[in-house]
Amino acid sequence: MRVFRRLLPTLALFVVPALAAQRQWNWGLTGGPSFHSDDRWHRLSNLGPSIQAYAERRLTGRLAGRAELHVFYYGLHNPPVFGVLPPRCGGVCPTSGPTHELGVAALTAEAKLADLEEHVSRSYLLVGGGLYGAFRHPAGEHPVRAGVNTGLGFELGRRGLLELRYHWIAGWKGGGLSMGGLALGVKF
Image (cartoon, rainbow, N blue to C red):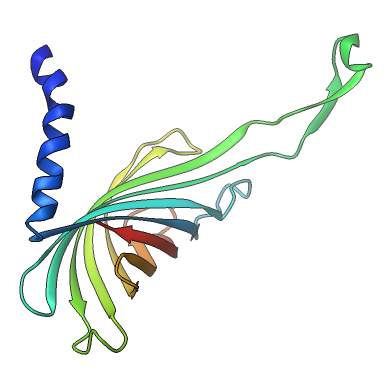
């Protein structure tokens, strides 16, 4: 088992470029600012970063299948609280309040429908769904729920991407959880 763990990264260095050279699969990374709609705690920032990695395979001229891994993070420290501390601060020093964070990871599958006239607008539509799980939660919970997502994307040059995405997670406390954002990316 230990040998396999050491060989896997080395093997990946050869396999990933070989798969990319076959051009049956496209790989990419996107990231940017995102928002969420769950503010039950009133201490959690509604804005935060998101990162996505995807693997995509063209099925027909206009249709492709895509598997994605998403990570969203929203966190905010409470405003500073002033209190009396040891004299090294001069008597009164700011202290930080508790941290409230929401981190969500998702594994999703999408259908990508490309524009017929790729040489004109090079846009595409994404529709899919998957599993969304909280890895950081203000209430200390770690729910895993099903959700759906949609997006509109534009290819920028040969390798650039601009995507507008929306995710809705069913069964989150207080109804569904909506997340979305704008992402810039690169495809390999």
